[in-house]
Image (tube, rainbow, N blue to C red):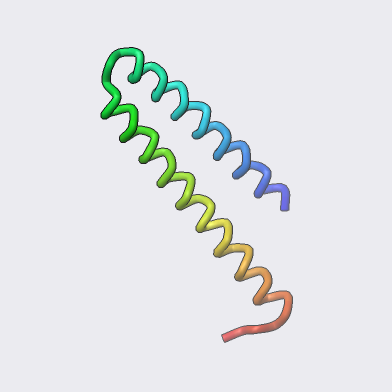
Length: 68
């Protein structure tokens, strides 16, 4: 389970970087690009969470011996 802690820090890092880029772009008057950066960051994090959930469900299947 320690490698999942790395994933939490990666997601937090992506959030911080996206927030900084969003703020800079918004102050430059480029709100459209700021929204696209935020959306892209959200999609990347959503993909990472989906992969972690896939690993979790695979582990649950292996624990309870539901092999296909």
